[in-house]
Length: 113
Image 1 (cartoon, one colour):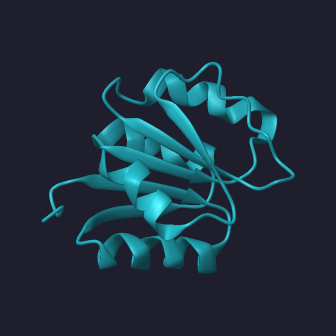
Image 2: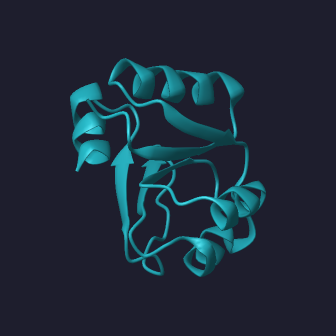
């Protein structure tokens, strides 16, 4: 069972955020926090240790660079990008990217390792 992993979902769209939460719960994960923007995620990241942060939002004003200051080194960052966005992840050592639309099995593979 995967229930011990802790996730933070940063997603601008409430329906998509609910979908990510539902997918994670389907795979047996139960510790899931959600927030709408990278800037709003700071208080969650400062007060919790997450195994994975799933980011599905635009990089407004270079906010992704600021994550490096507050995300623990052990935290994996999974950026969900559309075909129209190509996020610059070079400043984030633990970041990987998956492109929408994605295969659920590919998504699971990224979050389970």
